[in-house]
Length: 113
Image (cartoon, rainbow, N blue to C red; front, top):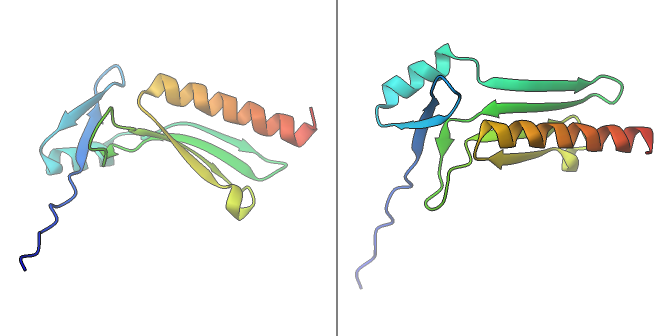
């Protein structure tokens, strides 16, 4: 019986243009340099009293095989271990909107409103 070989997972890599829109690049060296030389965090909110941090950043890597890649990630950290979560979005605008909704939701939970 002949076994099938599994094709390698294809990752696509991206940088941001001058308007913070993702652009796919095909040179890993170029991508690596761009990632090292640019600020990847767009918003970080620290809710000091609770120790919760919400961070929105550019990932630059997509493993998606179909559909638009989720290149921005908003991460909640400092909540109980099972409450730490990450959410991917396609655009910076979506990511920043999500960031704000998450911060507002956490604030409502903390204040009981």
